[in-house]
Length: 73
Image 1: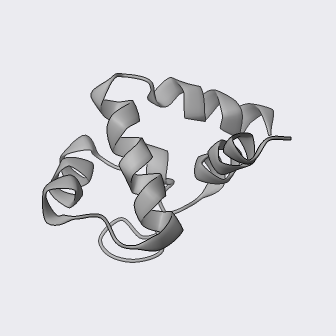
Image 2: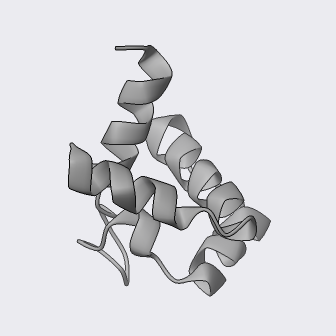
Image 3: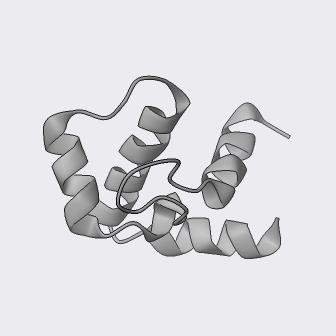
């Protein structure tokens, strides 16, 4: 398995660790929250990279790809 594949699988199963949406899958976070985080600046590290990818996926209407990965893996 390629590292990028594992990153996507991890993203599909990662839940928000804190805040108002604690416990919700990152891919299921409301768009307005992700846009707010994008403007504020994503946190450092893996979580920030994951949220950045969620932003790009939501921007392009591709969230379904992560939901499919979640079902498959």
